[in-house]
Picture 1: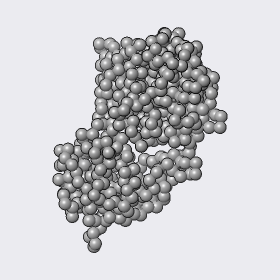
Picture 2: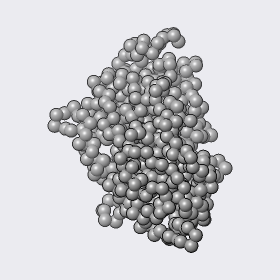
Picture 3: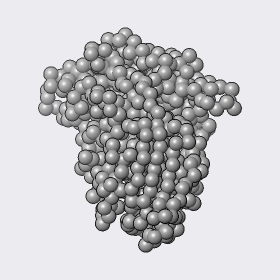
Length: 549
């Protein structure tokens, strides 16, 4: 999932600051309008090439994505940016393991003495392949652990009072409704971590009646044949930290009641308590389960592309402002009911890469060298789980501690003249002030998140860096349009409903490249301000993300 958009006009560049003791406010007040500005025709040229049919949707590991990566590297080289990949190149080549679940190999059986219940795959349960092994066969007692969450900040510990070492945990999908959306999404993504740290050997997640209203079980079952992808460590091990979780299943709520036949609460009562926002207890279930599956593996590779503009300050040049944009998309659709099978990904994310390339040109041609270095990173495998960004966060080509901020570009929806921007993450760090300042120079407002329930801050390439302690923002166009005859929220919503991850996300859309110019100029101004501030961006003390492990 991704978003963002762009805008058009001229830019600002901070004037040269003579002394190291100049404050950030003084540096901002000394800024002057720069001669450099984004160019609509250049944005269009980048976007149309990257979203062309010849690149066949830029799927991770495909020839089309390789061509896109070489195009980006060539643009970096033409601008005179220094290589920031591996071995003096612009490329950071990543090996991936793609894993498939073998047909009809998955079984799920619950036993209590001579009593045995077998669940039907994929009507009653679904599962995915293992990234580690080709054969899995796990039998262990079952323990219910509520939502399976642990958080000192929110007073949560669903593992309190139960021993799950060597056992299979059973948990509800999702999280309590009273958790803040972004923080809750982060905790939800950490469920495997919480279980593994306590010695669990498997996870069974219960689909709920409430979840059924949002995403029916059958929808998830439709994607069962899709492979999973993991990046490989230098030693060839897949990047899955929790080897002890050797089995898993997602169980339909209508089939799950027998697991609770001996429990102190029925499953119906548990679902009712969860829906009412009441506490959900944890307890032994009194049964054991056997989970089996077979998996098939293949290896692919795909590159990140990285380049750097060195800073001019003797000390600050060793720090980096990081721009990210993912160059991959989802490739060719297997839906034979459509005439067009190529998912071109014009908005997602040829537009973001086009903005990053144009931002890089503006830095080079501004005539004012930034104090900090600026690192431009085109990442692969975002659509497979933010994998290219995650790899770079674990295997950085510059010291990770020296990356002061990440400005992420993902799915700029360039279809209307926006009057405001949304900056996911802006409420968590001082970067919110920077975005507001940069946007304000063009008469653009910084608005609050209009869809907090989506937890967008945890769903794009900045998130792996956030988890490593790097303050980040992820921009998108706001839902207010400049023109009275346009409704920005409706335009954005229509794109998401009708074109997102579909072949119609193509250059046939009515793309507003002038809006792209404004967005690019603001994007440049954000990085320019960060690069020249004396003090690096800081997490706000009250932010949940300031305290991640």
